[in-house]
Image 1 (cartoon, rainbow, N blue to C red):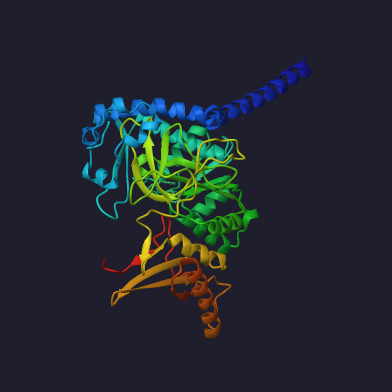
Image 2: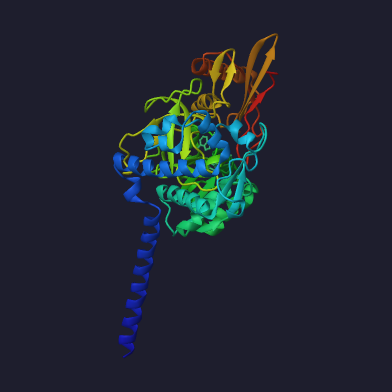
Length: 460
Ligand code: DLL
């Protein structure tokens, strides 16, 4: 009898285990919608067309600000029958969002809104975006998809070191992680020693933060004598700012993880608009919720697939803050190449930065990410500052670059030689001459959120 009881107990334990595993597979399956994410293009277009017609009608009926824009263009919802008619709709810009601040673009009664987020507003009035319960649900689902694409399962421990609060990073990844059923550590950004302590003590396997904060956490780990084998991390989901392939490589090596990119913006809901998969070469856009177009930022002309330009998004399911043809000012390109992960959703390349991050120096277009590529290719860390001055109508570019402790020397000849190497590297990347100043380790302030690397002292 005792034997029989033990066998039953053993079997029920095994059954319980099996059931648990099964539930976990189901949980992951919930946020890898193969049916949709791997659908043929005609199905994706059909879904988008159907939703677009509905979304346009919702905006027309509920957002007088945009209805007026449509009327000015002489169109009504009847003109939008499929995504082929998308080009007929007027663009929305950040200026429109500021004009309509705070409630002018709200698409539902205020009482249906349960959450808001906002941009930092460093370059003008804040942009506030609103979410109904369904909007929050959809947003968290997008973030859960990103986690699944980075290999996460409910077994994982996800440490969210993006800022919580008005910024969307913390709330978005937190919601996605909980949806997937992961143990979620709501750290927010900052307190780097405690971040590392929790990674070690709790056994964090997935870290979510900005790439510049990930690099900083890696640097502090190294200083504390910790290498990849001393921490349980296996993946990182890093976004919210432009970062180079070289920076990805550095973070992956320091932490012994796979680093995945994630993209989004407050206006559209936050992180999860697009995310990287195991192929790590571009981010799949959640096309069942957003339509992406690439336009020429100067003329507004829609460009063919593969062209570089400004990415424009149209939301398809949003209730409280629906945006039609929203100009992001982010410069990137789209591709529909077959992806090794099986997903068919269009991929966007890493944005180079916003078109308004683009610096025009001596008439030449310069993206900070190009400068970062040169530095990292030459073995320098991504701790740098770009300073631009205008003296007697001429622009001067200076790049202050931190040396690593291993590189540090007070041999002036050696420092001059290294500076010259970087000047040459920058000249061939940018086509203009820059002054390079090597500075001592740890002399440039670290970032716990989005890094601020440009100091433009020109009064233009
Ligand atoms: O940065 C949302 C986010 C949070 C995305 C966490 C990813 C992870 P905003 O503060 O409104 O929202 O800033 C949006 O940041 O228009 C891009 O210029 C830039 N950006 C966001 N993700 C990336 C990325 C969040 N992966 C603006 N690569 C966007 C390059 C990015 N730039």
